[in-house]
Length: 275
Image (cartoon, rainbow, N blue to C red):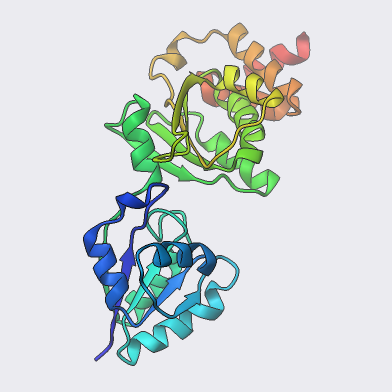
C-alpha cells in the first residue's frame, strides 16, 4: 500500500500561524520535501521537530519528483512544504501533486496561510471576483503578451513580485493598463506589514526612485466596464502615444489602445501617423 503526500501550508511570516494539524503531520511523516531545506529547518527547529528532508524546488523538480513518488509508492509518507504559504500555489509543488495523481498516490491537504488570499482580504480591493496571476513571465516577449492579454480583464488582478523587480512591473502594467487603483501589500504577518493604497502611475513614479523591501503582493483593479464606451478616438490615440514613449511601435501601440478602447486599430493608427 502506498503512502500519502501531505500538502502542508506553513507560515508566511508569523510562526504562530502554523496549525496544530500541520505540526502533527510534520512530526508523523517519514520525510519532508522542502523548497529550501535551510528555511524549513529553521521552522522545524523552532517547534522541536527532527525529520529527514529532501530538496525539491524549481530547478530539480523533474529529477527529485520521481524519487519522492517512488518512496511514496513503497509506503512512506511525505509532507511537501514551501518556504512560506501553500505548496503548489505558484510553486513547483504543483508538478509533484500532478505526478502523484498520475501514479494513484493518495494526497491530503493540510491548509495553511496563503499570501495572495491574505493580501486580498486586507487590501480593501473588490474580492467577489478576482484572478491570481502569480509572477509575470521573465521573457520580454512573453511578459508583454501576458500583460496585453489582461487589458480587458474586469476582475481584480493579483500578482506576486520581488522587491527589486517591482519598479519594472509597475511601469509595464501602468503603460498597458492605464492608471488603475492599486494596493501594494508587503511583509504580511510580519512586524512591518503594510498596505499601500495608490494607483499604478503614482506607484510607478514613486518606486522608480525609491526602493522597497519585503515580499510583495500587488493587487490591481480590473478594467472599468464603461471604459470602452467612454474613450474617444483622440483619447485612444493619446493613450497609444504614451505606449510609444515606453518603447512600443506605432502598430503595437495602436493594437493595445484598440483593445483598451474598443475602437478600431486602423483608425487609431491612422491618427498616430497623421500627427
